[in-house]
Image 1 (cartoon, helix red, strand yellow):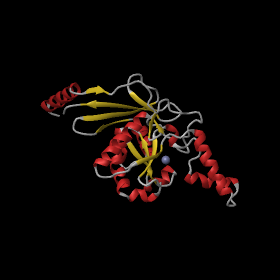
Image 2 (tube, protein in one colour):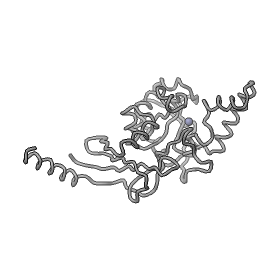
Image 3 (cartoon, rainbow, N blue to C red):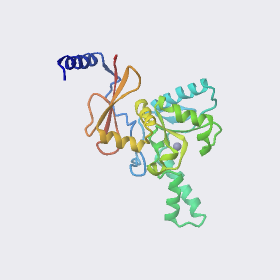
Image 4 (cartoon, rainbow, N blue to C red):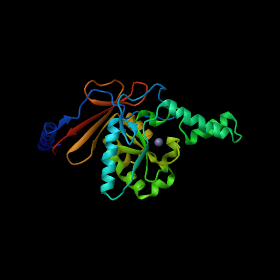
Length: 262
Ligand code: ZN
């Protein structure tokens, strides 16, 4: 490599480093990227520490704030009436829902094991519902939670735009073999902006994204001309960066936001 070229690269690196600044740095474990599914259940005692209420539904403040902003922008885009149908649900509530479904199926003549297996296809087994995190919401326009919602104006808008507010459509139609959950266009999960945007842009469901971050270890993600995120997988909790544990073992994803001029 020519000396002048080497020098130019060095100077670019030095200058770009100095023109970047860290911000949005905090120490608490946000648990925003906590993966919950049948293979990664939540402890029956787990409940979020903080709540806010929206339309009477308890929800983690970050997710609630993002929902209100998204709802307002949807309205501004001419789509009215998006409302919450469900947000935080405690373990015991989910257990009652599941037991009710099992009872209904058993009443139709299925034995208990079969009824439980069948019930788990449409109602999450207690501990495996994301609603227990306080970060998942069910939304609708007309009060119904059905597959048709995905092809309505609101459903299409959410699929294309909810990532900008930090939400993912958690159970996409084409990923049911990975999520093991039927297509649910009404169920959104808050994970934070860079992660939601990266997943949508790269057509990854949550399970695939977590596997990806663990595999690559770290990556940079530019969200516009000036801002990028450094996303890192770690097995030790960092002291001074925004991070989230992703399960009940020692696995963390660190999210650092940097603002640069380039
Ligand atoms: Zn849901």
